Every structure is written in structure tokens, then in C-alpha cells.
Amino acid sequence: MKHKITAFFHGLISYDYMLFGGVFALFLLLMLLAILFRKKLGLSIFIILLSFGVLFAGPTIGYVKLHEYIFKNEVTLLSQKKLSFTPAIVVKGTLQNTSKKNFKNCKIRVNVYKASKNKLKNFLYSFKTIQKMSMLEFNINQNETRNFKMIVEPFNYNRDYNISLKASCE
Image (cartoon, rainbow, N blue to C red; front, top):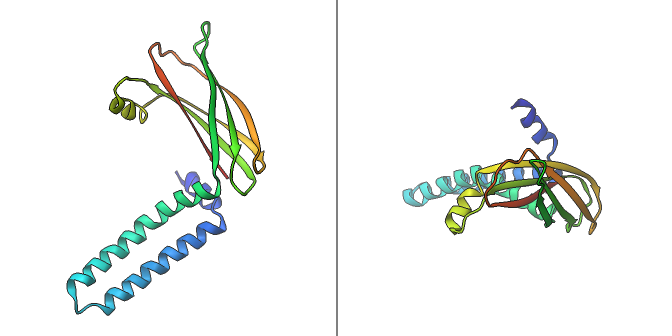
């Protein structure tokens, strides 16, 4: 756990620090505003609750949205085939850098989950994966497209399944 936290802090970029500083400054500004409106109790309590909401939700939502924007990419599933003599699936796809930055590395994740004709069950099954696999791609330039092939093994599921692909890049 300690290693994951230190890796997170070492992976922060300057935009992250500006985001965290801006959220903290907004928190202080809202608290100051609540102090100024202390005569109006209802408004003051609302502003205090809002400021704590900004303090706790702002960095999390901001971090996710900022990284989705800065490190934008597209992952496409080209084909997937279940092997007959080996308990495995071969997944082929492409990863395209659509951002304005070069990527140092990208972690591509394949999640295999149960399939259903019911849309609600399909949505719920997507949270409980049967099998997952990941791989790293390094040094991807702007507008570059990389082909990849992954072998998900061992895979012993005999019913219908769906595959989802995701990539997180830095």
C-alpha cells in the first residue's frame, strides 16, 4: 500500500499540483465567504457544506477529468478468438495517441466478463470480470497508432462473454 501511494505522488505532473492548489484556494475562499455571511445562518451553512464538498470531491473528479483530457487515447478491439486446444483468448487491437503530448508509457487492460441479453445484467457483469490481463506499451508519439496482441490465459469459461479494452497513459 505504501508503495502505491508513493508511486502515485511520484507520478503527479505540474498540472496536478495546480489543480490541487486551485481546489484548496477555492476551499479557503468559500470558507472566507461563509465567515462573511455568518449573520445569515442558512446561507453560511450551505457555503460551508459546499466548500467541504469542493475540498473532498474536487481533487478526485478534477484529477480523473484532467488526465482524461491530457492523456486522451483511443483503444479499438480488432479481433478476439478463443483458442480450441489451449485455454486462452487471443485479443488483437490498436492504441492511438489522440492527445497533444507524447506518451512515455500506456497500460492496456483487457477485461473479460459474462455476457447476457439483459442490458441491466450486462452492465452489472461488466464490474465482475472473469479474467483480466494487462500489458505496457512505451514511447507513443502524437497521432501514432500501435497494434497489439494479448493472450488472456488461463481462460476456462465456456459460455458467452464480452471483452472490454481500456488504456491509461502517462
